[in-house]
Amino acid sequence: MKSKVYFTDMHTSFNDGLQKKLERLMKRAGFEKIDFTGKYVAVKLHFGEPGNLAFLRPNYARTVCDYIKRLGGKPFVTDCNTLYVGGRKNALDHLDSAYENGYNPFSTGVHTIIADGIKGTDERSVKVEGGMYVKEAKIGAAIMDADIVISLNHFKGHELTGFGGALKNIGMGSGSRAGKMEMHSAGKPRVDASKCIACGRCIRICAHGAPSIRNGKAKIDHAKCVGCGRCIGVCPKDAVQAAFDEANDVLNCKIAEYVKAVLHGRPHFHINLAVDISPYCDCHAENDIPIVPDVGMFASFDPVAIDRACADAVNMQPAVKGSILEKNGHLHCDHFADVSPETNWISALEHAEKLGIGTMDYEIVAVK
Image 1 (tube, one colour):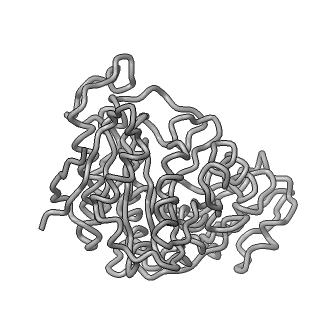
Image 2: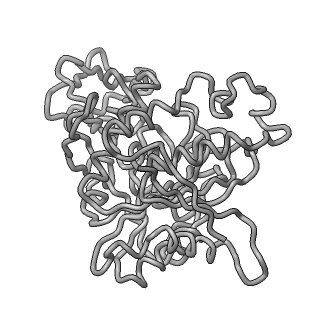
């Protein structure tokens, strides 16, 4: 059966703004069918790396959270720490970045929780039924503690996965530091000797005796390393680094398997905002001009269908003059491949469909 994906454009009137349209879209999509009464609700989103201005405004999160509270739920906005070095590597810096970008209780009306804790090690191991690449996903504890998951997603391009939407936000975004390393890396962490100060913190945190100090520099024995990522979190000089060497198609499949782990057995609902459609991820500390004009807002119970619907809608749009898309030309009949030719976004959707997460066969329902 086709999954229903509800859609509304970004046009407004004097008495009908975007936040009202978003709530109406959610209502028409069946949001109130979920029993929120007394339930903890993780509103999973991306707070935006400091310096990036393409991330979703917190006003949208306020609309979603206020709606949940009126239905009796206990929502919180959440994300997990990053694997790379930046403004969201640990929970303290991450909260500073979230607050700077407006994701604070004054703007959203709810608390901001970094799901995998101060150093990215607060995780739950979750079995992946039918997983080909991942047997046990490592998910941020606060996300797994929630009764319901709502994904609020900025739909845009991505340099590794083709685009970022519901699957990317849920799968990669819910992974702890070890989870992100599992998805991004075929190998294990390495030490940049030029940054290492031989402080020994990696040795003290490791339960498997993998790191050691030799000739005044740390080294990691990959035969002993289990890839937990704790050494990355404790290194004060960011000398311990993930490999980031996984093939893009396999990365997409791993993301789909993490989505399976996060959503299985719980109510979930998904909102994609195809606006400010930048060519690359909001993890960048900058953003280029959008590759296409704003498309609109989408809502569905099916994360696969909503991502496919958004991809199709974006691919029907003309390139913005002066954008990377226009400069690269139309070589692949696919805007995302034209921006990032090494990507293959369909692999994530195909694998998610195989895992039973959803279907790419969808029906658009327009909402005024």
